[in-house]
Length: 350
Picture (tube, rainbow, N blue to C red):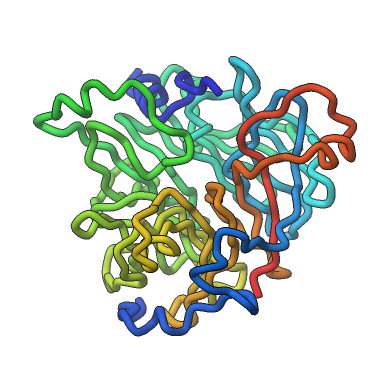
């Protein structure tokens, strides 16, 4: 799948024109299906259901609406990409929201609208429009410089990720030509900082980090921040105060999202293999933890890459995955041609 043109690096080029720490003993509480063991993990599976599947298409980064009826999904098909609204019931396409390249690294629900980054007015801005594609589009913020993961808040401010070019770029980074679309926490050649952007355009730096998610009451931010060779989840208030570490392991914990009641956080992690010390850290699963750092539990169990979770009010977690698509699943959707690499799945977080 060729997605260089929508990689984070390519989008950047266009953009230029608390809780207590979870301690080690927390992992004694990790839940797994009955019969789970290290010896049988290679045959362990879960009950995830396929949601989206379209001919010659990949679907990634789902965001479920507040009422649980609609999904926002990034779609890639051959040499094109766009933001699509899908039905959660069956994954059917409803309408194209936008084809802005900048929106592919920054979109979210804003009430019944979709807020996204766009360069449509000749400079980078944060725009919002009705999710059904009908009605006026409004620019809430005129922005400058490279930004991603920008979330508009009800008070007119926005939380986003500011990218600052490294002073010295290693030869290894310079040689890297393609960013894996799964790894949206990795921007080669840049340092990333969480910032708060005010309505007047002024900006304050909150913390180093990436993948911010604002709580439903807009009082806290959960995000990922490097700690040594690992990335862990942290919590802080929207003004940058009250920093607290949420997860801790020899792992990469990224792409967090809140439950609708603000009590739980789901995220992508390779900690299943990392904690078992098997030496294989290529497996990515969805995990869940309370906003108080308790009750860590593994949600998905598969050797594929599961990521970018989004939870609805009924406890269903939507996520993208490169799990294999069976002939039966293609037949159910009446698809005879090839399908893309990633698709949207859902599972109930017990």
